[in-house]
Amino acid sequence: MKLGIIGAGAVGFAVGYTAARMGIASDIKYNDIIEERAKAQAMDIEDASSFYPHYVKMSWGSYKDMADRDIIVTATGSLDGVRDRLEEYEMFKDATEAYVKEIVKAGFKGIFIVVGNPCDLMADLVYRASGFPKERVIGSGTALDTTRLNTTLCKLLEIDPADVRGVVLGEHGESQFVAWSNIFINNLTFEEYLKQNPASFSRDDVENLVRERAWRVIDGKGHTQCGIGNTVCSMIDAIVNDRKKVILVATLMEGMYGLDDIYLSTPCVLGKDGMEKAIELKLNEEELSRLKHSEKVLKANREKYK
Ligand SMILES: NC(=O)c1ccc[n+]([C@@H]2O[C@H](COP(=O)([O-])OP(=O)(O)OC[C@H]3O[C@@H](n4cnc5c(N)ncnc54)[C@H](O)[C@@H]3O)[C@@H](O)[C@H]2O)c1
Image (cartoon, rainbow, N blue to C red; front, side, top):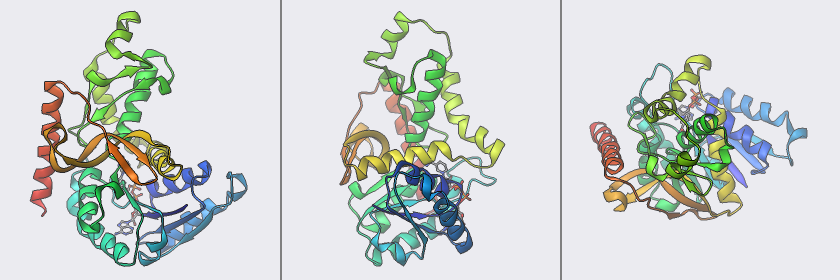
């Protein structure tokens, strides 16, 4: 599988390195406006070739050189000095639109995975700029926030994270929320699990911890990497190996939850054709209204910088 990564910064590096470690790509090409950075990331990852499951061809190139990729991850943007991911829209929207058009014009026929923030609005932008069907433009949405929730709950409940099925919905940003009505511990509903195994914690605290987690990591080391690198590679793995795996990602809303014409997260089946099926969860009134709020926030931002 030929993987392209636009933006060879902290996130771009984490995605490329994790993909090489997992053996889910045979060829990885970086692009960055700072060419030396793209070259350096490719060479650094190549230096560990002896330790990967198989050889991975590493290179760097122009937007046009991305035409032959199977999957392109967009990881451009910067959280430097930013406290709300929406601020990145105005800063990076035009450049993202321009490079997506150039890549498509060069003949790219694969799948875009949009990670650069605000990733829901950027996925919406890539969808429009590329002219691709929605199945081939996937936003990472609240996939990372959901793994953060699973980790938080696994620590609180002292249970394997693989047995925690959490759901964070809404914007990958400040208006996100935990959909408590849809959390399962193994095969038990969250309520039933807690009835049998009481645990005392505040749901608001958990939600705030998950929302704040990125800023805590950024305050300490300047950027986030491991969570997003592995989250994106789980998406790539599902596509490359046609796993039909259900992952919470951002896709185009066309009536689901009463939402329309905006990218937002819902569980989606990912396989060889990209986003193959979107699944609608049964939400309560409060959750539906919080989802509507995220839609409003995103649409207002999109409108403001039209
Ligand atoms: N979706 C998520 O869950 C998630 C998680 C973490 C970070 N992010 C986002 O990912 C993006 C990257 O974060 P980072 O920490 O890697 O930032 P970074 O500053 O380390 O790296 C960004 C890189 O993109 C490059 N770049 C900028 N504009 C470009 C363009 N037009 N073409 C090619 N390269 C370009 C920069 O030169 C830089 O090397 C940000 O928008 C960040 O908010 C998203």
